[in-house]
Image (cartoon, rainbow, N blue to C red; front, side, top):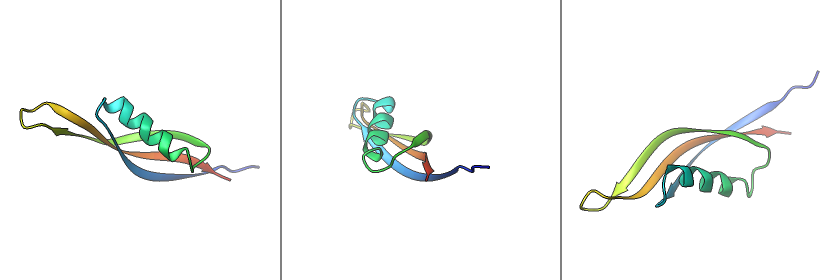
Length: 69
């Protein structure tokens, strides 16, 4: 019987465009060195604002799981 083992890493990513872009860019960067990515969970969302309160950057902390061969 075959067993599957997964590993989870935690990363931070940011984007001026929005949450979805921050997530996609983070996963894209990890995928350059990690194969068999199976999913991601966003644990935390933060924003950086300008002095007038406008959101200038979205930041996410997320966990990414991948299969270990």
